Amino acid sequence: MADQDEAKKLSHILEGTREAAEEREAERLAKSLKFQYANLTKFASQTQALQLINEEEARAALCAPFNVQQKKVFLACKNPALEATKNVIDSLKQRGYEVEIFVVSSKSLETLWKGYKFITGRKKEITGGLEIDANRLAELSSEIKNIAILKEKIDKFDSPYISQIFEIIIAGALTMDASDVHIEPEESGVRLRYRLDGVLQDIVDLSEHYYRSILSRIKLLGGMKINIHTAPQDGRFTIKTKDLEIEVRVSIIPSAYGETVVMRLLDPRRIQLDLKELGFREDDLAIIEEQVARPNGLILNTGPTGSGKTTTLYAFLRRIYQPGIKIITIEDPIEYHLEGITQTQVNPTRDYTFANGLRSILRQDPDVILVGEIRDNETAEIAMHAALTGHLVLSTLHTNDACGTIPRLLDMKVQPAILAPALNLAIAQRLVRKLCVHCREKVEATAEQAEKIRKVIERLPDRVKKPTLGKQITFYKSKGCELCNGTGYKGRIAIAELLVVDREIQDLINRGDRIPTANEIKDLAIKKGMTTMEDDAILKILDGITSLSEAENVLGKLL
Image 1 (tube, helix red, strand yellow):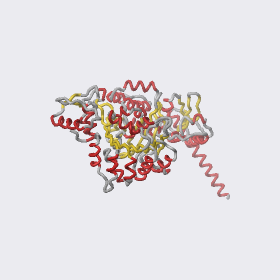
Image 2 (cartoon, rainbow, N blue to C red):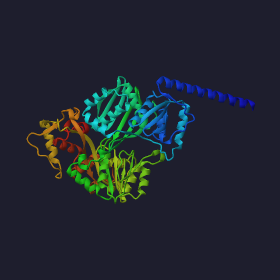
Image 3 (cartoon, one colour):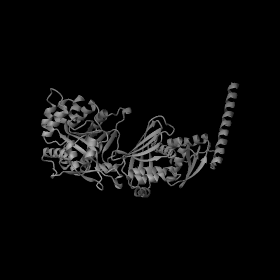
Image 4 (cartoon, rainbow, N blue to C red):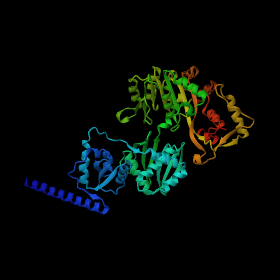
C-alpha cells in the first residue's frame, strides 16, 4: 500500500514538473514571437467567445477564443505562427474583430476546449461559411474582366492576409461563371484552373506558400481534417454575399505532388432558367409543356454526366410547382435547394437508398416525385409502379440517346407490360458552347456540307420551323476576343431530342419476341416526327447559336 502511495506521489511530482516545463516553454515562445503569454489552466472560457469558432476548427488550429469584448477577441494559441492558426486569425479579422493573441500551453488549451460541451443547443458545424462583403465582391467583379486581369491580380498580390487571395480566386470564378475551381500541384508548380462553359481553362500558377495557405483555408471552411494529407476528404461550405448564398462542394485527393482540390460552385442562379432559355425549340417546348402537365406517368432525361439533366428536371419542377401540389425529391446529393419542394438525400449508411427512399416517399402522399437517378431494377420498377398509380415521376438514366432508354430499362429486367404504359417521354440532351456574339465569324458551307444540310432540313417534320436556305449556305465559327477570354464562346445551351411514347411505340415495346433495338425504335420515332440531337444541332448551327466544330466535338461527325 505504501509503495502505491509513493508511486502516486512520484507520478504527481513528475506531472507537475512536466506541466511547469511546458508553461516555461510557452512563455519562451511568446517572448520570441513578441506575443503575450498566459497560463489559462484555471480559466473558464466565455461561452460567447467559444461560439466564434466551432470546436473542430479550434482543435485543428490549436487555438481557442476565451474572451470577447464588443468587437475585440482574446485568442489563446499554441503557436500563432502555424498556418492553420493564421487562417483562423485572418478569418476573425475579416469578420471585423480585433484579435489580441496570447501564447498558451497545451494544458491551457485543453482547459478552454472543455467549455464547448457547455454550449447548449450547439449544433456541430459540418460546413463553414465564407462571407464576402458585397462592396468588396462588386469591386473585384468590376476589376476582373477576363483571365488576363485575374492572372495579373494574383501575380501582384502581396497582402499578408491569405484570405484575400482566396477571395480573389472565388470572386474571379463567380465573375466568369465558372462551374468548378481546380487547384492542382504538379512537379513544376501549382496550377489554378477554372471550368468555363464545360472546358478547363488555365488561370495562373500559384506559389507553394499560397497553395499551402489556401489548402488549409479550404479545409477549415469545409470542415475537413487539416492534418490529414494522405487520404481523400470531402467537405462543403457556403459563400455568402449580400443577397446570394452559393454552396461549394469540395473534393480533396492526395496526388504525387500534394493534395489536389476541386471546388464545385453550386450557384442557384444557374437553375433559374426557364425551359426556353435552356435551349429547347418552340416545337419541342410544346411537347414538354403537354407532358409535364399530365397528372401521371414517367419522364426520363438521359445523357452523360455534366449534360445538364438535373438543371432541366429542376426547370420542370419549377414549371409544375403550385401551392396545391406536393413535390418530393430523392437526390444524390442535393445540389440546389428549391423553395416549396421537399428534398431528401440518399444516405446508404442509414439504408436510405433510391429504392428505399422512393418507397418512403410514396407514403408521403406526393403528387410529383423526382428520383435523382435510376440505377437498378428495384428503383426502376418502383418508379414505374408510382407512375402507374397516379404520380408524375421525373428521373434520369445513363443512355446515349432517347431511344436507347427503352432497351436499357428492358435490360434492367423491367417488365414490358409495366414499361409501355408507364413511360410518357424520354429526353436526351447534351450541352454545347454558344458562340460569342461579339466575335463570331461567318463561314460558307462547302458543297458537300450544303448538300447534307439540305437533306436534313427537307426531312424535318412540319412542326419544326425550318430555316430558309439560299443558294449559298452560311453559318458561323468561333474567333475569340477579350469578352470571351479568347475562346470564341460564352455560355452553353442544350442540344436535345424527345421521344414521345405513343401507342405504336408501346406496341413495339410489348411485342414479346425480343427486346427492340434503339435503332428500331429510332426509325419508327423519326417516321412519326421525332427530331434527333443531330437535327437540333444543325438547326442551332444555322441559327448562329453554336459552331459546327463545337457540335461535332460533342456529338461526333455531322456534316
